[in-house]
Image 1 (spheres, rainbow, N blue to C red):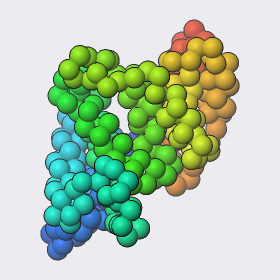
Image 2 (image 1 turned 135 degrees about the vertical axis):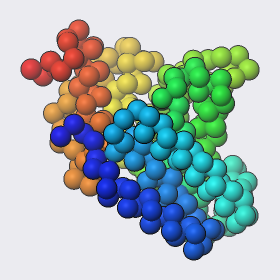
Image 3 (image 1 turned 180 degrees about the horizontal axis):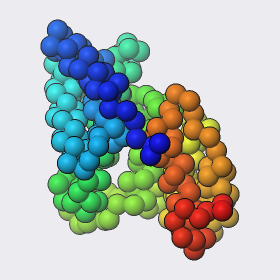
Amino acid sequence: MDGRARPEPIGEAVRAYDAALEADPDSLEAHWKLVRALYFEGDFASADPDGERDVLDRATRASDRALAALERAGLGELTVKPAVEGLAPAERQAAAAIHFWSAIAWGAWSQRRGLLSAVRAGVAGRMRDHAETVLVLEPRIEGGGADRLLARLHASLPRVPFLSGWVDRDRALPHAEAAMSIDPTHPGNRLLLALTLLDVAPERRAEALAQLEALSAAEPRADERVEDLAILASARERLAEERGETPGSAGG
């Protein structure tokens, strides 16, 4: 196995969510699940770079439709606490999921075009806005996924005047630690903390390397196998890089 998922099951899921939205264009659950499925198909199940780009283009378009459905439901302005206090739990969860998976879909889209291109296209700011909205709605979604995303944005994005002046290296570690406090067992949170420490807190390098070593020896979760395989591979690659080893030789 090369860490790729079989395309048939996720393709069936995409078709099912498309059908659900044909039947009910205002189903918030079907909207966010379609965005999530298209992201997964593009990032983990497409056979070639052109296919990845095509599917991720679809994911961003599905994100726009999901956000339009939020507007139609009267849930378009949810950036401050008072605006969400009267929402039913199901509405909060659905709105948070739409914003979270929209951010992830745009992030995957931007990875095929480079960080600076993403900043110039306004994608980075869009991802930040979605993640910060998730923090208002439901910060625990996806094991602290919004804090995870914000930590990476603040740690790794170039700070370009008038485009990404909001990037603040000092905010990266607090977001990484917030994600860990929500779910300290999540492999993504553990990797993100290690990467953030290496990027912005070199005095804690030993802690970061210990986290990478533990992840390198970890097993993927059964229900998140494909995603976890990518996370664990990233941990091994970064550990090898930090040790000055050739790719694939960490732990050998």
